[in-house]
Amino acid sequence: MKFNQFVIIGLGRFGSSIGRELIQLGYEVLGVDRDEEKVHEMSHVLTHTIIADATEEEVLRSVGARNFDCGVVAIGDDIQASILATILLKELGVKKVVAKAVSDLHGRVLQRIGVDRIIYPERDMGVRLAHQLVSPNLLDYIELSKQYTIAELQVPSCLEGKSLDDVNPRGRFGCSIVAINKPKGIIIAPVAKDVLTTNDVMVVIGTNDQIEQFQQSIGQ
Image (tube, rainbow, N blue to C red):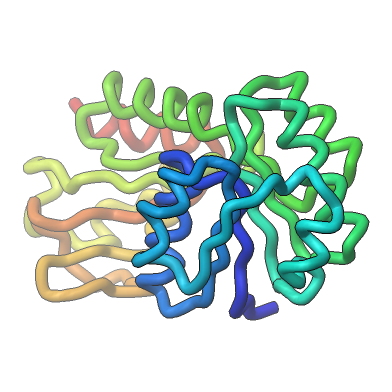
């Protein structure tokens, strides 16, 4: 499903960041927050903004929340408000509801409510940073599930000038290089003859163990 209109509840750092990026990508965004200062700050950035309490059903009805393709509950400092706003969006029939969770308990409650996607910004960023700190070639790390991961790895000097056939990560470790980000552009689904240079970034997908073994092999 292609989303065109988003409503973001909570215009703190997390909600504002999402809103700015969605606008840059060409989508329409309504921002809702009780804080007048936050709303004013984003009023010239988002498509529409409103100072309101999103835990009140009539407020969400009046702004036409049910007509939005996706609702993002980005409230972080008030768990009760986060849960109430989420319930209302679900009851109003918003097609997809995404919510920020600040703890595992908060996340479990959101899951019970039926949230389509739960985001743990602080926890996820901590996990990604930890992996980056211990793996010098790792630029980014996204956990797809408890087993599978997508990782961005800087090509080390030991792989300079080598083709994917020479490196053979799938045959040796079971993981696959699904893209190579080169200075001149990205290669999607690279072939065996494509050559790596130290300016490249490899996008690798596989199990956590497979990628770890590959990282260790190129880090030596």
